[in-house]
Image 1 (cartoon, rainbow, N blue to C red):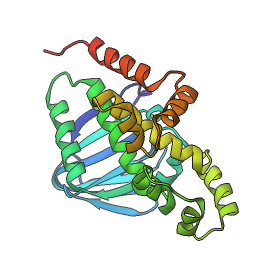
Image 2: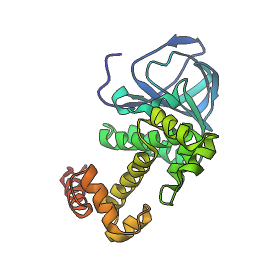
Image 3: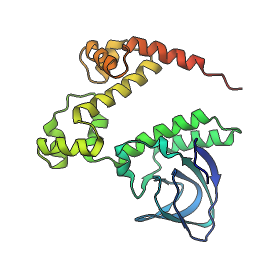
Image 4: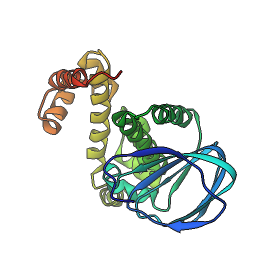
Length: 248
């Protein structure tokens, strides 16, 4: 397969003959019917109650069991950036909980429409990728994702990993490429962006919802990271959405 530029999403079936290969793109594998086996550094057996993510350049062997059908997303490596990718080495298997069932349904709906809406598939994958990174992350980083709106102490994060605060700070920077405080600001910024674009909540309420007591703190964060105020970001985000051509 040539180098992917966009996500390729399609239904596939696997034969009972084992095949081993590797490729430059990642894969999100969502079984729909039957069972398949995939082995990387460890063996996985997948049914419609589970899913598997394979990072780029991950050698794997796969084969199907009798009749099977799988929804597969071939994902360009450029859509899987970041130091966090190391958490997914060897693949990550997850149970099909309510969030993943909803994602599978939405992705399947897009694939069933011809042609599929590329932007919709890409947006759904971005959400799926965030879920995967959170699931694979070390305990303290999972805690940050779940409690970013709270007042979090460095010592408490370090204790989750069994490190002293000084070593933890060094470990965290090596693991994520950011300091703990910068990582926390990144999480708060992303959630604030979502709330600004998708809700009509006052900016003060958004600031408080992501962990800041005063809206001035959120404004400083936006001006440093986005070079605009939260209100300006909201206007641009709303304008961008209106600019998308309507389908159908």
